[in-house]
Length: 437
Image 1 (cartoon, one colour):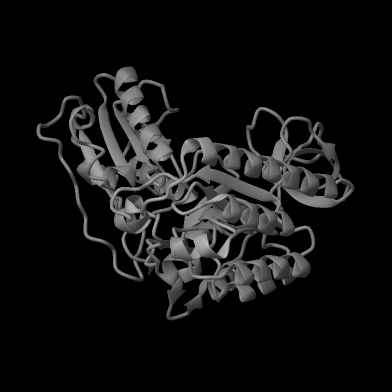
Image 2 (image 1 turned 135 degrees about the vertical axis):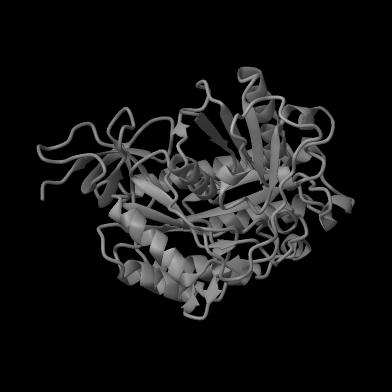
């Protein structure tokens, strides 16, 4: 039996696609092994959203080749869609290159006897972009058995001035309504207790049956004991109804990750974002008012061309004023082919790094304040299977350590846990105890 291992970088969408590729290979007789173990086929699912992500992708490719000198090495994903990645020495390490869109059946492109080196020049499989209403055969099987990512959408048509994603993922398109419900139903039947709805820009989901809010309603109507978590979702018109659904249905996790990118009007306009700082703040505050104890997250970038001290201080004050519990902070890195990559007045690292540190400290303070505010609350916690310790995630996205379980309780259950305190080190990690039912 041929063995295969996967290494996935980047977003939940990549994780969802890896799960579908894994499922296909399992159906065709492959054995899935842990990353680093001996394997005939090694797959690296790459990311290119930032310069750091591209660099990590190249590092993982090199590491994979060193560890597996004779394995058949497949590289797919967003970095594989960047023509510069596979030039020169990088390309010679790889046996098969799969730019986006990833093939629905990876098994169709693997040789009977996979080996390295395979062919020269490097085989590149370029499939046409799926149309709106696309179908994904199979069921994505992640490595764990508690939660699964459910891909409902791909691509983006917004073309923010800093973003390479439309170039490597293509325009926005939505998965078939019936196909989403089919996979969700099969995942539920297999025992997954949390489905994470994901895509590049899920707020743009639309099929004849409805938009994202309508799709979430349909998912919640499926039989099965599972809850739904939204992945990152761009601020947009459907959010008001999504917030309403989250407020009235306890099976919708109280979590919204709303990428902001910057909290000052001038820079936000230069980024090409489709909302104002006032509109974003109104959405965040509405969610906080309508949904008690919701975890609100965001993405923020510093060092964008044109950022000066005044803009940053306004951004800092703006973020400090919002009821956020989770902040992903990173420095801008130019992406070749995007408008912003050619713009002047990009702050040097000597300015942007201290700004990044200040926002990271702000994010840590807000995360701790949120966690402390949950002490004494009873939260629904989905316990991980085989995590090495009893740990799980609350619906409002806290990592909850449960020292002991009452008789009859098992992993993979959603259990009511009273939060007893915040653990040192990680402001989002708390300790809880199961409340007897």
